[in-house]
Image: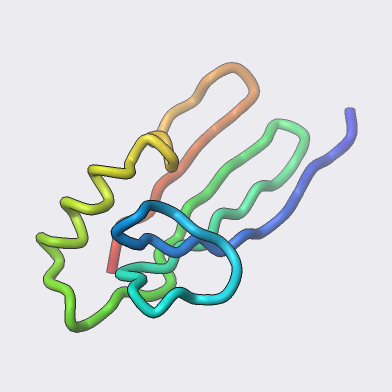
Length: 85
């Protein structure tokens, strides 16, 4: 089976998750890394807006949380979500 891999930065904004250049209204930036034929998916928080309280970021992440999924093991996919900064 072919191995897959790739890193993508996602920015959490009031509109949801976005890729590309960092939007001015982002509240967090996460790196999603995918590795291996078993497909390990790992989310790591790389940046958090110091002007936005953690409680507000938590609410926004929960609102758009379905995008990240949740830490789990399902068939050949293992997903790990790290702690926000």
